[in-house]
Length: 134
Length: 134
DNA sequence: GTAAGAACGCACAAAAAAGTAAGTGTAGAA
DNA sequence: TTCTACACTTACTTTTTTGTGCGTTCTTAC
Image (cartoon, rainbow over all chains, first blue to last red; front, side):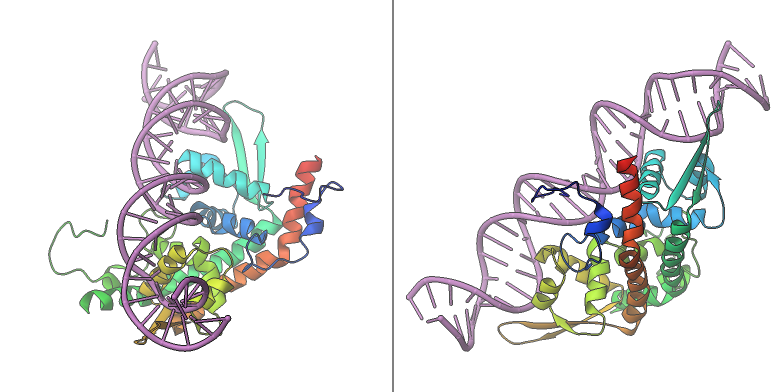
């Protein structure tokens, strides 16, 4: 994937991706969407909204993440430009994570969805119950 | 999970779930969020916005889904009350899928996120490029 | 002293998600 | 008369994701 079949000039992603269509296979947006909607991606974005946190604090805030998964999620989000990582060269290590402007925008959308789910959970739960009751 | 340890009256999910906190482990909203943000869940919701589709048509519209995954995704979404399935007892089979009112609301949120991603993909791609260029 | 905390990277293992292939039963098209 | 479409299901394989635990390197608290 991402290979340059015609193999000419050095590819620039930002050129090639004017506008994709989510519903088409290989739409590059799908990759980004995947990071944003990943199990921990959503929660990290939300946890980081409005505050800067250190790795451990973030881990404590996001219930259930393992260190490995948090690190990986943070890498992905940083790589896409949603999260900013600032490391101070001291010992013991001190690293701060925060949202970039891009990340803030994305977090808003993610948060809107998450909020909707939390608020409407009772409606969904009612459907579950009905099905059990028959 | 979901077992009734104290084992008294028949549990009703809609009671137990007044309001969860996404950031806590075992928050039930996470299950629903998982379905909505799953790889194919997002696409199916979007594909079904505004139109009723048959299984095959849906499969053709959502590029890349296998039959198995589409069926499973549809099951999950139906189970949560986002999708309505209407089967006509004829041969060859005829089944129609559409969004419920709940599904329409959810789809709006999901779509908002997806649209944001598509529109802002160039900004993300620029970050990718920068990193490559160094 | 000895343990914990800081922020990971790395190797391995288990679990979950996804893909592949094949089968079902009938009808209308080629 | 052989083929395709329809809407799946089931069994099996592959891929991806997630978790576990160890090592690092130094400092502060007990």
